[in-house]
Amino acid sequence: MTGPAPARRARRHDPERRDRLVATALDVIAERGVAGTSHRAVAAAADVPLGSLTYHFASLTELLAAAFTRHVDTVAARFDARMRAAPDRAAAMEALVGHLTGDLLASGRDLVLAVELYAAAARDPALRAVTQDWMSRSRRSLERHLDPVTAREVDALVEGLVLHSALSTDPMDAGQIRSALLRLAG
Image (cartoon, rainbow, N blue to C red; front, side):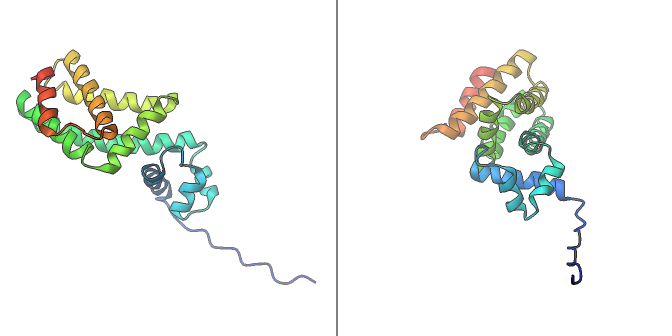
């Protein structure tokens, strides 16, 4: 004799779940690094079933690409707004110093996410596409005030300054960053 069938758990209507998973993935990456990020870790942090992650993302690389793309979209938009607001080249260099010292380097989370993206992209072509998009967007923003060759060189200097700041026990301060940028593009 069988008893009544167990009650089925009601499905949660969660139309924002994919977006929450991407945001949670960024949190997990910032806390544990790419190496410590897994479907299981993100599902646990988001308090969703593991199957929910594999429903929305076919692979961990797809999840990482979505998360890093969101990070890049946020940072690139802030940078472009700064460059768009700068009325001339001198103001653009000050805006760039502000972007580096205020947006990228002042936020430990953003700095860690950038470095994690760089390291992961060195091995994964799908993530390299995310970094390439970021560099292209940065250069377009810089080209509002600099010629294309100088914009590319300044962008490379910025990437190096980010890595240097993340890895150095004696990172450059705002004055040193300003001096380096002005020496190259002033």
